[in-house]
Length: 474
Image (cartoon, rainbow, N blue to C red):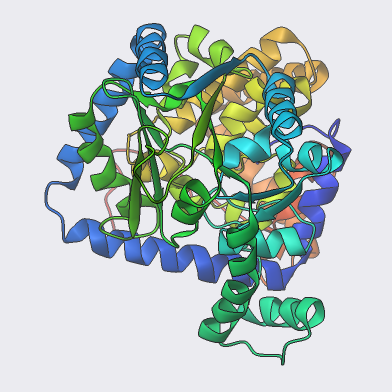
């Protein structure tokens, strides 16, 4: 991972995370379980690669005509009786939702899981306006009780163990300590039930918005999204502009790959369809639906012919689970709501220069590209952003110039095998006295960044060059 020392906060977060062996153990256990389940489920489904290709094609086509589909979606939603607001940025989205709560005198909000509301920092804005906000996804609920942001796109409390949660519930609710998941879930359910029954505002994200019918699709595993979207009289659904797809018949292709990639399920437990407010003769459902459609930098991604592929993302979280950087440092080190490889791509567009270092926080190993359910070429996009960052001369002018000069020098030396072998032998002789069990834990100068986060294996001396006509020994 190559990032500039001009980002001391990020380096400090990395060092803290790397030093936390317990955190790394939790991340390895949780992400490893996801990966095993995903591999098993995909193996049972021979058409998986076909469905990936279909989902990619459909999403690419939708992004290619995003303006048309958004107009169609708005027309359908309003025809169904929903209110639609297009928000240019996070501030506009927050303002609309807070004003709605004030005008309607709404006092308690229950939220289904939504990374988009994390992106716009909705909770603090509502709380400042006097609205109590309760996260109802179990992972989101846990991190809210700990006053932490989510550390994973899909599993917000991936950095915590069941023992951590047991201690949290004991401290907050006075319950007897337990680390049994079933009992911990029961404690959360008991505390959330009153919030569901008393809430007058429901807030959710949107996984897919179908332009053809004006339908919002929410996929989840706990039923909390269904409670949040049906019990309160007022529902606010927040979605990025990229969530729109063309037809209802397209949806099945995405549902086939989404859960298989992210959690290793054949399909998520609940798939919710919301098309209109409740009718006068219906017993449940919101009486009023507001759909906030957010840009907040997405149009900048769309305008870049290379980068727009990132808008295909389904937010499955699979690239985080497989990423060696994420699995070493966790989500909080990134400093933004979207973590891991895909977060390193979209965060600079959504949050500006301050996130410009994130594309450099990658090994470019390609595992993220292989696991992505819509086959986003994440390494290519990361390299594109690195190139743009260096071209713009924003944060790494010296570092980039040094890297280019160093690469040029190495390129010249690589054309002379004897020089490379001689330098390798010298390096082995220099490094051996400082090595412990075959590794060097600290190196000076330009090599220092490597040993900040990992040990460097001492290279073996190169074999003596053998000419082409020299016979091999048996």
